[in-house]
Image 1: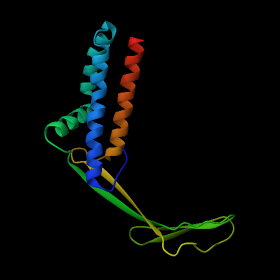
Image 2 (image 1 turned 60 degrees about the vertical axis):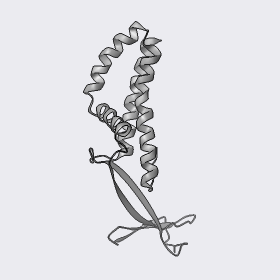
Image 3 (image 1 turned 180 degrees about the horizontal axis):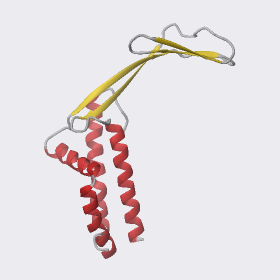
Image 4 (image 1 turned 135 degrees about the horizontal axis):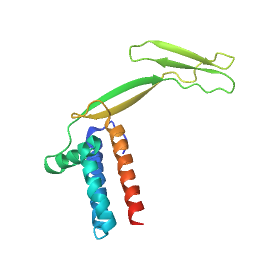
Length: 160
């Protein structure tokens, strides 16, 4: 899932992610429910997962999106202006902050002129769960996927 400046597209992708990622443990249970080693491991793993704040948060978010509608999110957009300079031995980078302050960084031995007339604007939009505004959604989803991957790897070691 990537960040999209279009909020509707982002919410659609987020809903799909929440639903699909929640299915990981359901599939494990279905696939290995008849294996006593798995069942013993999974019973204790469930308690561990229920105690994990991030896993619990994503379980709850999936339940909200299935039963109540789209997750509540906020968006934060940062706009930067970038000037691209292309030369062989030297160049400079001009950074223009949101407040209009300009910094020039010289690279190499010569100062050169820009090849572009207008700096290019770059928009970066990040979305945040209303319930968890301290970290952006993409970062939280990445952390969640890492935890799910660990659970799957542990399960594979048990049943193989």
